[in-house]
Amino acid sequence: MRAGDRAGETAATLILVGLILDIIGEVILLFIGFATLVFGIGVILLALALVGFVWIALVWAYSYSRVKAGDYAGARTPTLVFAILSLITLALIPGILFLIAYLKLGDALAAGAAAPSHAWGAMPYTPAPVASAAPAPRFCSHCGRPAVGTAAFCEGCGAPLS
Image (cartoon, rainbow, N blue to C red):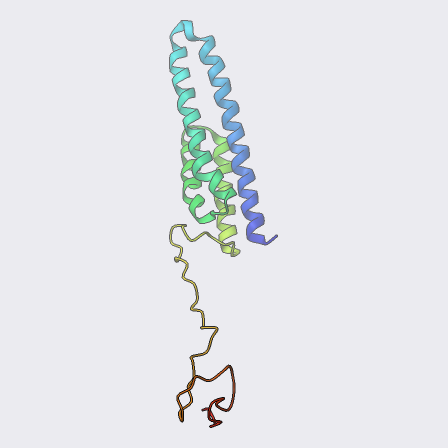
């Protein structure tokens, strides 16, 4: 396994651990929301939990799944955005994990891990031109008969082929 791929796998693991911590936090928020539903504040907590689950789906789709697919360049910017927003919303441990994952994705790209051609900034794939396997047909300059294979002389008149 190349160094870039190891850094990418480390980033995927960090993002996954951050997601698990986010899920645990949202489940706790759900339980508190249901427990305080009679006091009126539970509705607000349940709404925050719903937003949190949408957040988890976004991190999964734009960060974790891209890293697992090997699209390190495409996952790097969303991972940084998720790290900053997590830190702002006081999800400190997942935010720090996402920030470290962002740095690991940079290491993966610097180590030369292959980025898919659809990644932002990547050059589109252009296949190299292929030389024709068959040489151009040759003809005898004396009688006009087609030459066979790599024959040195014409089969029809015996004249040398050039």
